[in-house]
Amino acid sequence: MAYTSFFRDPDALEAIVKIALPAMIQQQEIRVWDAGCASGEEPFTLAIVFAEHLGPFSFRNLDILATDLEESNFPQFENRIKKAKYSKKDVFWVPEKFRNTHFIATDDPDTFRLTPDIREKVRYLKHDLLTFQAPENHKSLIVCKNVLMHFTPEDQLKVLQMFFDTLVPNGFLVLDGFQAMPAEFASRFVRAEAGKPLFRKEEG
Image (tube, rainbow, N blue to C red; front, side):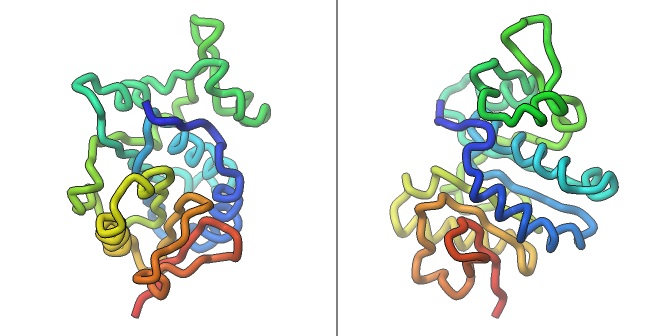
């Protein structure tokens, strides 16, 4: 199973809250795509962050699509996300105030489950990025971390083109902090703030 964890990229989360969120809150619906979600910690982190910074109306209109490519016939990612149950070790990096607010105890003393309001914001769909066809369109924000590095340079460009076409005007893309935007897209995905792994789609 791919490595992931809750709240693993503070720089990206800070940039989303500081830069992307004020722009997206003007939209009737905030549609997020987590491309490469693994076992769900990242999209649930996004749901928690949005819950903390959106008003009730905007949060009600939040939709997070979490996708990944299962590596076996057993739908491990889908099952994990639908159950939304994580061990004490899994939630170690969740700030205490969020653990107390967005997680509930289960019959197993070593397991916690996300609250219903967070669970219902995340949908899972099996999807292969190398089809170069987005599962849905008109996304406000796309998050894709620890994925593109495994693709050839040519395929990276095709995936970035798919992301560009899928985002709404002035939509946002989050990549790994160490990943530079290829020159072919430097004028189409502009870094929203120096040093932050957040890019804004530029039209024209």
